[in-house]
Image (cartoon, rainbow, N blue to C red; front, side, top):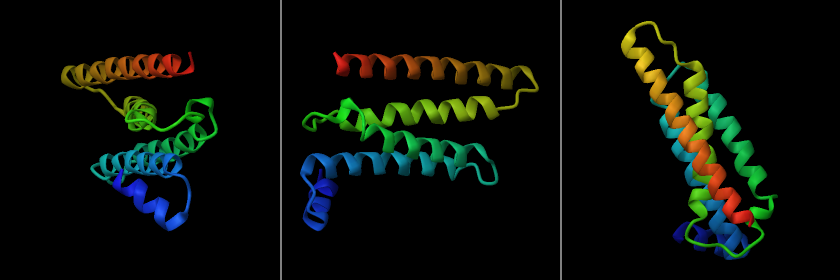
Length: 126
């Protein structure tokens, strides 16, 4: 909220918009921070680029054609989590039993995150 109020004062946009910009920015920073733990790999850059595109696209959907609420962070965080998990799952190489188990956990996490994201967006559109 503090970042939203600061942006409102500097840019002059309504608080709903600046709050959403701050939430999207924080989610993108989280994706960047997680990706910085894997230097030299391509999947964090791909995930960050896709997350940026999805976050920008969300601003033009009916999901954000309402007053801002406390759950705005989840609107941006859940799709970013799905993108991050998908990028990591598709780039993860499994050569032994332990790595296959980790890969299976990544797949389960991706399925659960996708289901929760779809359920949240479906409830918001109703």
